[in-house]
Length: 581
Image 1: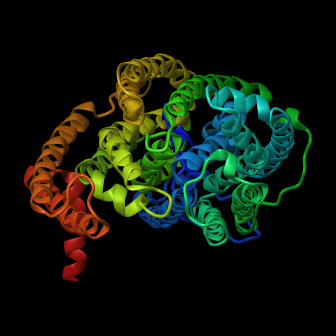
Image 2 (image 1 turned 90 degrees about the vertical axis):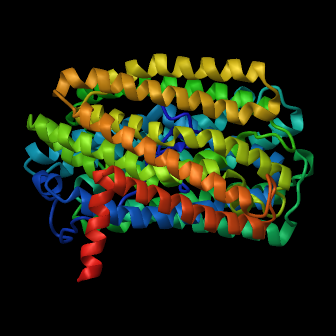
Image 3 (image 1 turned 45 degrees about the horizontal axis):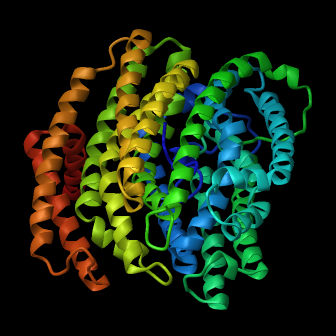
């Protein structure tokens, strides 16, 4: 249901844009709770389930901040090195392995397996060690075969996603794809290893490994700028050496990320021994769960196919095409990943264990608290994105070949996208609540009308407005679908688990909306009197960001205290107590 171009998620997790996901980094990541001795096997699941979700979330947020911060630097370097047009080509080529991965394996690896691994760690005498070994072996075989098929089919994939463009454009996408499609192998291995580590109470490596990927990419595009210069080019002007550097460096980054997870497996006592007795995996159960997840992902990818084609048709030197759309989505995923993904990752083992034991009162308590916390903390960030869209676009993206006109187009998309940040996070949390039951069927069925609604809105807006509005129109469609997904999920979840604290959630959302509105008005008034217009200079943009951000944050905090938003007041009280000590 994400609407994003990359699997964001380390996921989600996000986004991705797959919504999960992803990240300044391509994957959702996490941080440590327990680190068993190397000789031990996986810890009892109760130990994971009873760990402090709040402590995990706080630690994960730090790692996610670093990961997504370096991810932003990576995307800044991509825009500065390639410019908008070639950046669109690169983004399309980057999108191909991500979508192939998601379509075939991604949803199963990231969303189905954690609940299954949790159950096997509870019932197997070796706490799921042999089961995880079989699973990893199957993943290696399946991913290798998928890579081979995808590389052979690269020209066909390019023709699907870059239709309507000239031969130079599609040819460059295809050449980059030959080097970048193998990324899906390392993507899949990273996702499965992260799932194994998470279910053993170890979150550090999956949270920090994407930083390695980002650093390799930063070095790659820094080298590109030094060797070839930071200037806008046409597809026909990009030579073989440039293609090898861009594509090879991007592939190397994902491979380094996967390799960075291997030491953590030994640390938690996991040893990978190839096992080919796949029948012992219970493939029928995985097939039932994975079949609905495949349906979910397939519908989502069809929606993304529409987005990619519409944005490719709208792409030009100054219009918001794939690069700008993805930059904005990853900006949303930075906030989502630091806050929502950290909370979801910490709650997922707890909720899975509670569901497995029939403790639904604990399940719904975690879900309600997570929803309220995510909303209260993300709301001021959404306000900053909307009110400060222009200075953010200048400060974050306007470098090198990324022009002032490209920054203006980015600000328009960001302004619209900010509205969907909180609904997106809530919809993701409720979707993962179903996975914890475990139930992949219901999210898959919800996703069909949700994606149909999204695509309908996006196509209508594309036809009604000019190409310059295409990126913003895609974001409007996303937001409408997030709201529909959250409402539908809550409605269908209640009969399964009982009361989910909807009254408390709605009361908190109402107070959060009032505080956010007040903060937005204060921010707009301050920015209006500061120097700079819709296209501020970098110095003006920095002043607007610093002053405007301080006013928005302070106003929201003050109003939250007055309105007694407990998710904020409790944090403030904790800080005061510690400062007092």
